[in-house]
Image 1 (cartoon, rainbow over the protein chains, first blue to last red):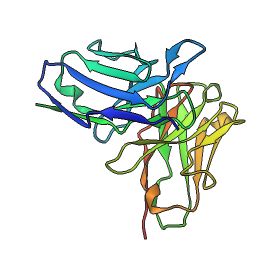
Image 2: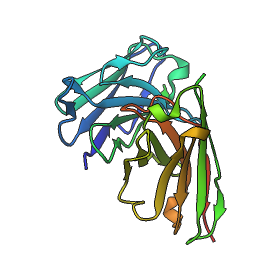
Image 3: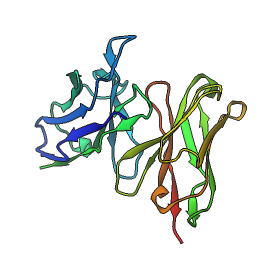
Length: 113
Length: 116
C-alpha cells in the first residue's frame, strides 16, 4: 500500500498570511499515461463531507479560489493558501488515487492564530 | 446539479448487518466508478470500496474484504454497500463519492454505530 504522510499535524496561521501543507507518498504516484501525479487535496469542515480542492497535484477544481495552489513532484507535494481567510479553517487531507487501495494522509488541522 | 444522498445507517450490535444506499442525481451513474469512504468519529478518511460503472469490477480495502459488498443499480441511480459481521471499529460516517479517478462529488454521509 502507498502510505501518505502529512505534516504538520496542525497549523496555526494569522488571517492574511500564508499556510503551507505538506504531503509525502511512500512511493511514486506518477501516472505514466499523462505524466501527472495522482494526488488530490481535500478540505473538510466540521459536520461536512470532504470538498475536492486540487487534483493531479496542481489542477484547481472549478470554483476553488485561486489563493489555493498545489505543487510537488517525486514523492513530495504541497498545498498552499496564499492569504488565509477565516472560511479556510478546516482539516486538509491529501489522497493518492494511482493504485488500489486508495489512501489518504492523516490530515492537517488548520486554525486561525 | 449533482447530488448524492446516503441512507441506511443506524445503531447495530456487533456481528449484525446493515445495507447502506446512495441515490444519485444530476449525472449518468453508469458512466462513473463509485467509491465508499468512511470516517470514524474524530478520525481521518478511509477508502472502503470501489465499483466500476457497469458493476463488473469491484475493489475492497483489506479491512472490509469478505464482510462488505458493493453493488449498484444504474437503472435506479443507486449505489449500495452491504455490510455484514459488523465490528465496533466499523463505527463511522460512510460517504459515497463519485470516483472516476477523482472523488469530485460526495454525499453528506450516513452514520453507522456498532455497539452493544
